[in-house]
Length: 170
Image 1 (cartoon, rainbow, N blue to C red):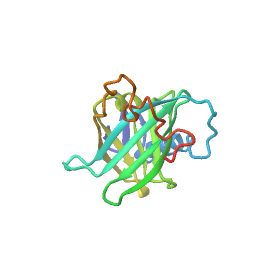
Image 2 (cartoon, rainbow, N blue to C red):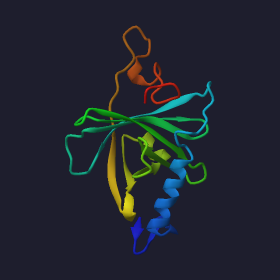
Image 3 (cartoon, rainbow, N blue to C red):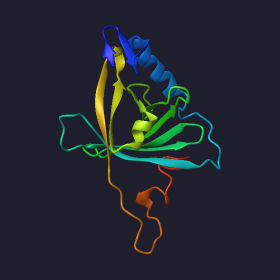
Image 4 (tube, helix red, strand yellow):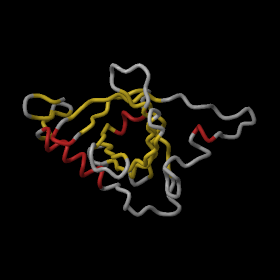
């Protein structure tokens, strides 16, 4: 909660709005594109989400996220209006359970959510923008295809593909 000049998490003050945004930027940078990832790293899909503002009913931005055992985030971002894809890089802070990431090669904005929130059907995320501005957006899980009738996993269920992992185009 943003209140007065501070940010409060579960009732405890964790800093000013600027300090909280800087913390998110630091977390996101720890999982940046230059982070070394083991060749045999195992990735778990967190899902595919439509990313929208609360008042939008027809989203055009989509986010796919995956995590490894070290808390590194990778994925892809797709803008349907411009038909452009970008890679997503970030990290989860194990102590605070804050997931923070950036899109493309830009350091801002920094997106963040509690890692447990990314397991839900929808959640609010914070978008920390340049100049100390913070915006809330909504992530809504996109329903994915079930395994085919033959019982084999399809790429859309996250078991047959590596969304944003090492060696992918994301």
